[in-house]
Amino acid sequence: MMDFSMINWWAVLACFAFSMVSGAIWFGPKTFFPVWWQAIGKEGSEPAGMTSTWILLILASLIQAVFTVVVLTSLGANTAGTGMLAGFFLWLGFVATTGLTNKLFANQIKAWLIETGNHLINFLIFGAIIGGWS
Image 1 (spheres, rainbow, N blue to C red):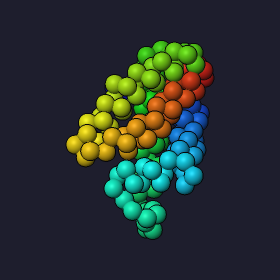
Image 2: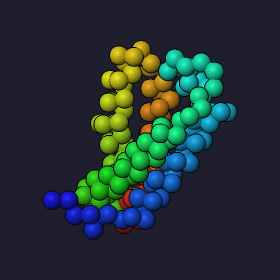
Image 3: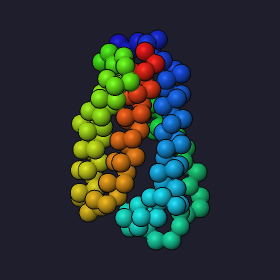
């Protein structure tokens, strides 16, 4: 059974905040957003009325932060270095490969590179935060 008392909620909050900031920068109008938007087959600027998309994005980022804390804590990642290494392996084993599978069938490799790049940075920093907090 899952013991939620083992969760460092401050680390969750820090990881969540980092993911929001890194995503805003990574997918900003002067960084990767225009290239990514085109790579997923969209034209023009982001459409209006994306409230439900943003709510789900925030929820997904929060869940990702919680479970990264749970997994890295369970693995005993207790330094920034071991946390980053564990974060890298989580990214490589689950995030990069799952995303690649989805983007291969959509013929969107450029979009995968952009998306997975942001996820890689997040998981590395998540690992540093979680491991360093121990």
